[in-house]
Length: 404
Image (cartoon, rainbow, N blue to C red; front, side):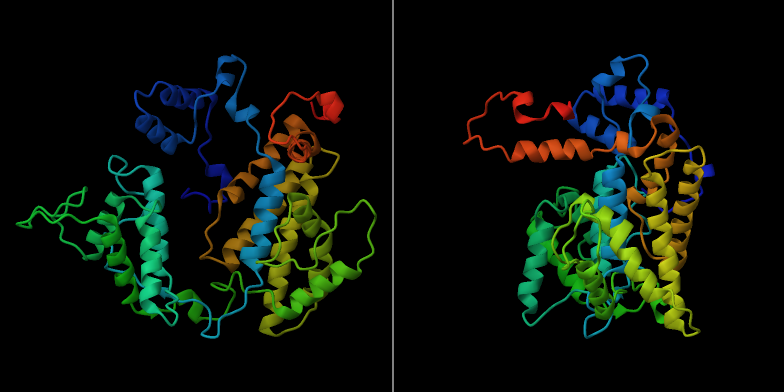
């Protein structure tokens, strides 16, 4: 997870079939479910019956689905959370709380694996990120505190993790055990999750909010999610409404936004290949010397690098140079993303997209191995009225034999 922002793929440590089989065997032979879960947290691999096949190679035969990775992953994330059309609050862009000197000197990635699994580290990282964000208190501060305390007292965080963070913040004695018992207290006071969660939330409300250094200077850093203005969105919606397109082209709702209706993968594909490029090129390609225009041109270069990479890899023909062209454009996108938004944390989809080109030479055009046909089949099955009586309808009768 710590390498999702790393684009120097020549320095990556590549997994081998033998190492994958060894991790899968360790998961299969685990004596308890907890040991199996720990093995999965470390390797990301479970056992599979496919490993019984001597010719099965997980590094070559386990594919990344382009539909989910590119359309529901990258295009959706780019439009909603990198460009974004969220309204800037009246008080300005969000600020953060400084945790310097408060938590233990650690990062969630280098905690002792014997004490915390990767899943537990992710929970600590999630809580740490939340502690850095400003708390929107509203008119009823106490109600807001109780609301967030109830969230962290639920399944969002384990008792031992709340104890670890509370001790790091200096809110409870260091003599509190992982089960919540204060061994220094004469009455052996026991801390429970609701109490610890409220302690953490109340600590957060008392912290001074500051602007990070990257937001005190000019530039796009720290502004992701707030870059599309109402005028930009108005132009996008107008173009969607008036554009004359072929009858086979997928339509998308004009109310597209960060909080608008949920789009399907094919609609995100149409948005990235047809509607958004037309509008953004028209709005952002104008050459001016002011800072705002230069920022818009940088955003256009970033966005078009993504759309070009996706256009290349989703071509119905695959040539030897397509893999290199796709990788070149995807690397430009990742490098520009890191330059314009150095604080942005990439997701697994960003990392997997750099692997996607490897499958072109082995499996041909992505139309032959993406999951659109299976999604259509699932949708067809879901629309069948069974009156809650499961049966065994014929695939030929249902017209589904073409998906088999």
